[in-house]
Length: 124
Image (cartoon, rainbow, N blue to C red):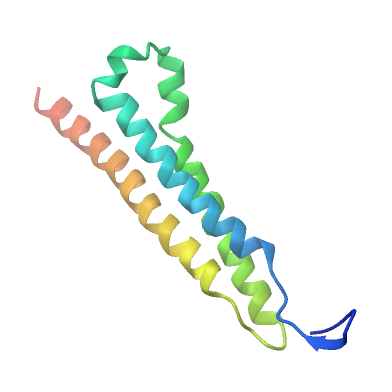
């Protein structure tokens, strides 16, 4: 893409915002996930007295963040591949990988919990 600046014509790589949003949102989801684990499962939960609705809101929040990161990363990849010179797709791929691992762990553990609850409930 050719852009004019004060020194004349220069060739620059365009900056896409969606891959950046994907990576930042994926990292933010991991921060929220670690925070919810620390608050929910360790002794600081006895010092911070939150209502039960706070925990009900806090548990799925990293999952929504990771889903948003995956969607924006995929849209960003498609946007980059449509251009004449497809470069700088590393941020989008990193956001998709980071959020994919988070989604697999979170939703896998939730599914495993439901299956375990169903198995224990069917035994008794």
